[in-house]
Image (cartoon, helix red, strand yellow):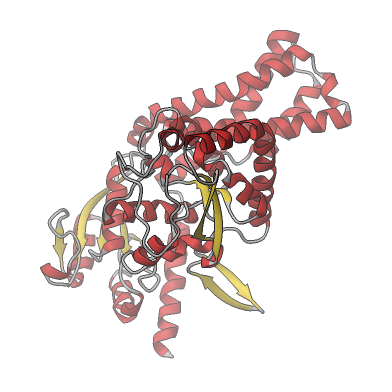
Length: 474
């Protein structure tokens, strides 16, 4: 009991210290990003009004307040690629502008503005946001220099999560941190990636090193079972000015949608869960149903034509049905246009390979362009699949890889998809090595951790682009 009380006291002391140091250099960028987009949208509206009308009247001021309220705080985009940043801006502006137009039409307030102002603002506003975010990226190094030298950082525990943190610090241009090295008590053979990073000493040397070299941030990457050791470290560091952060391993479990929750009044922590709970599930299923219905209506003539071509090209059914694992590992039947001379759905299924003799001449075209996947929109309409999600593998492949790859079955906590995060990142087609399958699963799990409706639409757009230039599938 005394140990538990001591741990709670240490945690409370640490929370107080972290709140006192919460105005670090990362927060400068958060403040800038939180006001950047709202201010750009308002200023672009004002400039248009002043340029086209010569003044900024009360209707513009009211609209400015509404726009600022809808877009504040702004989204953090510094760590996104340029492509993702542009998509993020356009995606958000689509919803904001759509809401403003609908509200304006419903209340007749839209007609208080000249048509030239409305039309021009709809395309100038997102362009101004893109420009503003690019300027922020270009000036980040100068902003960091204005705040002084980078913060000195050490990590306690040279394990997987500790080295992962070190790698992220190294590649981040906006962290404002400089890693001095690691502290770890374990022998050379037990430390993770010990040759890449500097080992500064044993954990008992930590407090002295922090005082001597004025270390500002300490990250404790220690297992949960090392609670007495953590308490001792916190006690040793009480008379230093360093900020201390925990990098929990959560019992060495890979967190999937980790979050706190409550069950019948008892607090619990989600370690591995689906992202589609509550409103997220409604959004996902609604978007899947509406988009797949629209697509099927639009492509129905193409489906009929492909079906006829498949029948003419070789003997066999036009639609090929194969058992796959779906949501919660339940078996489902997935529809595809037949692209092979054989129909395989047994315990031993060979993946399609380059120059595979089983693939028909028209089937090669279907697989290269992914047109063979089009019938799966019926699976989406039925609720068996999603437009975006981990690609379903044949049952035989699942039974093999679930024993070889850690966390493989976690990908079945959501409906399988016609396209996925792994496919648009280069893992489309044959996975002829275990490393390739491991990489595909890593992307699938990354999708589960970071799902958003925006990410789904981004993947859909990337898929459309890849279909016209990618030749990985055969």
